[in-house]
Length: 258
Image 1 (cartoon, one colour):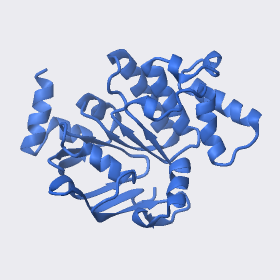
Image 2: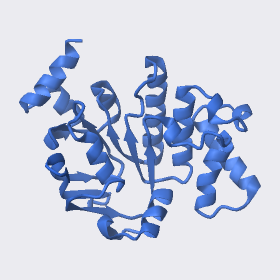
Image 3: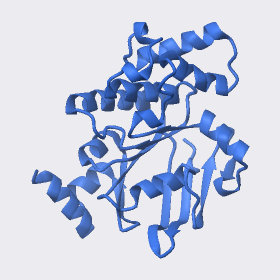
């Protein structure tokens, strides 16, 4: 195992004028690790996800990533082209609303195939076969391959978005409330799928969720945010069963009382 973190944040902050989005975040993510960022609405967890995935520019601080070739790069100093290549090849991003992460009027197979074409695949037959293989892996029937996502249920769209992201075998995937708005049974199926992909591929994930049950099921570690800061971080079971910070204690007890 490489002991150099896959992703490393130091003093990461984001301010909107006088308002603090995130403040002085120090955080490491290791290869094969799933990190859940939890907290109430407005705690800064989505801002932190935006910073870590380079969708937002930080006000202060640094963010480094260890590429597949072993070289550690400063993400603040990447060119737009280098950033685009990273997003297509080594990273993925799963939106809460799958419509934001899919081309809704392009077929299911086309959605997956587009990402392969973006990294240089040109043989139509091979692209189609690889897309079909990934649709099967996310439990979408082959006879839906030429259907547009507009005809899919919410759960199917989310699974298609996962296939679209995973087809280039990324090392790191960011997830923004991936089970939000889905029925409980659909959520369970999706979580099983994500857990299977982590076990099979050694994928690293940073997931933002307000649902502590999702955090417990998926993550190795949990970071609890409040007012733009991480107030507690540790192994998932440790944080949920023996929370140290008063805010985390309140968060956990309010869920247990439901």
